[in-house]
Amino acid sequence: MTTARKPAPFITLEGGEGAGKSTQARLLADRLAAASIDCVVTREPGGSPFAEEIRELLLGGRLPAGTAARADHVAHTIAPALAAGQWVICDRFSDSTRVYQGIAGRVPKATLIELDRLVLAGLRPNLTLMFDLAPEVGLARAGARRPSGSGADPYEARDLAYHRELRDGFRTIATDEPDRCVLIDAEGTPDQVAARVWAAVAARLPEVA
Ligand code: TMP
Image (cartoon, rainbow, N blue to C red; front, side, top):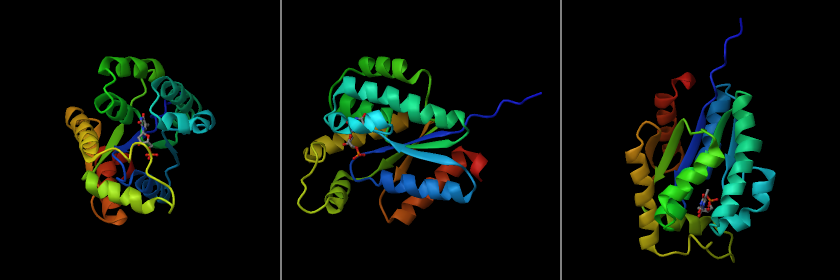
């Protein structure tokens, strides 16, 4: 008799600009690897060859391009990895669309829910880590990591009120969906934040402990 393998967890990292998600995705992958857990780190916009090719279009926040890219990313990167038993850590996913295009971009929530329903076919993150940081701190970090001579991207260049709206949007999702989301204080050094991430992962996904 064969026993069905428990599906591997799908973890998303979300938050505003400069919250440290990419660094934390890498640190979490290292920690999982040290625990002999095989994982794949991916990101949006992008995450599959096609979606990476049109990342620049996606940075413009164009919904049809974003939808096509997410469908491709799920089909070619996320679903195959989960099916093979690999954990998937994704730097931004549907909550970024809900916040950037929905709350801050005013695309109706019903439209976004319908697009996700079509594209995700029931796929839902097991755990979403919401990186919470004052926008003043996040924007300063994003500015400091930018190569000299290159300007802020169109999102980073928006005013503080816009970035506060983003922060509120992510916080609201975390409050509304506590079974899926954990709010992570993103203030502090990468190691301090990584310790909070690991505590959340170990509490929610006890298979790592
Ligand atoms: P990054 O700086 O984390 O790579 O993200 C690039 C930008 O893409 C970021 O400003 C947020 C934006 N974005 C959206 O507007 N909608 C989405 O669905 C995703 C995934 C990202």
